[in-house]
Image 1 (tube, rainbow, N blue to C red):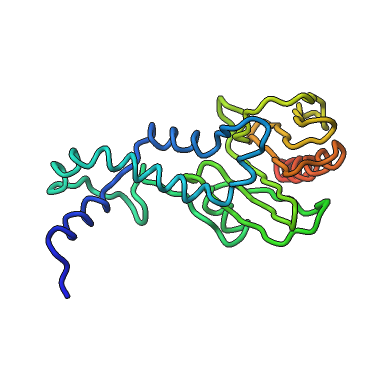
Image 2: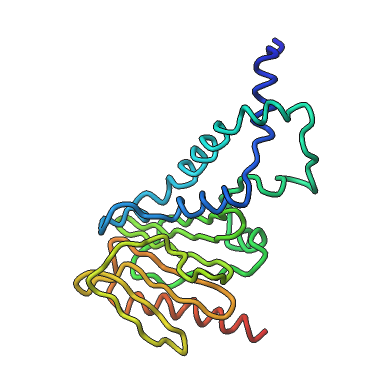
Length: 225
């Protein structure tokens, strides 16, 4: 059965929805922004973030449909192969190597955990933010790595915590945040990348620092190659 002209027109419109740099930046900020205080919502619902971001993209696209209808007869050329520059690209990868290839830099990872990991998820946000989520039965750790820019906190967790420690770890300025000796967030950066580790329900200070040290050691070894 052939598709109606109405359906074809709708498909053409949706195929040419583009996300500008400003829109992409706004979506990334919304993806990482936690809204509720001290309930660790980012980690708890991290598996649903790609769906939420996609819905946000469609909502933004819908607001621009009238303008796109006027342009649909002369769409802009698509450069290169695959997604056009500026389009949405939240992708789940099969491995850390695939994630590294997509990001264009080596993504480090965690290996020695304080709990048994049952599943691991690798996600690229617009090829700008690499995220690895490690899930256990009752625990979850989210590791993030991105190229260093003006903002050095890529955790997405902007809650206030009673316990905030700034310490030196092998020359790196490390910030730990948590409640009552239970730490849920580590933030640090070097000359090349920004890093963060978010934990649910939280870890002891030495356990979280051990995870940070894993990444810092691998990053240092990579920089010497």
